[in-house]
Image 1: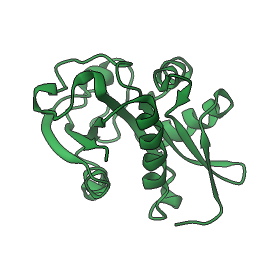
Image 2: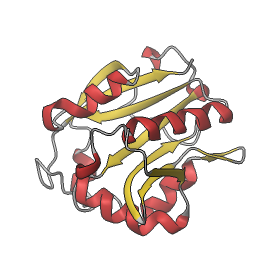
Image 3: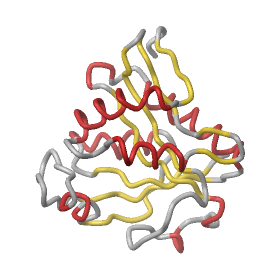
Amino acid sequence: MKEDIIYKEMQASDFDAIIALGNFVHGDGYVDSSNIHTWYGKGLKNGVNSNYVAYDGDKLVGFRITYAAQQFSLDQWYSPDLWQTEISETAYFKCNTVDETYRGYGIGSRLLELSIKALQAQGAKAGVSHLWRPSPGNSAVKYFTKCGGQLVKDHPGKWNEDSKNGYNCTICGYDCHCVAAEMIIYFK
């Protein structure tokens, strides 16, 4: 683990750096000034913030956006009948992003650990996520599995609607057909 990284709860003052890093890593249109406010708000519950950032000095090198339980809507891309927790006890891991030059130092895992502790303080018993199957070397699914994630179900085309509304997938462009792996972590 990189020793000089500072981890803290996400604040509005982090938004510009989050937008820049998020769009650089995930593709243009992934995050903007409108959705970052919405995403951030979904992580606040009972006075606890489940969103975290990582800095190396003044440079944002990673962030984790997490929605509290009951702060997100289910759609056809969720399989709650396959979860071992109630919907009301299940949070959503929206996004984990680490600057490419800082990967391999445990930053993503630490951000996840901090979010899980916050989610537990909010009353959640699990967190579900949709991971990008085509990530280089399937690294997203490998990382989440290493952190205790279990595959629930694969969802082809999950990001297609987002791509038609301005998300430019780094593989498919504005007609994304990437497969999403719905995965869940049960908290101990």
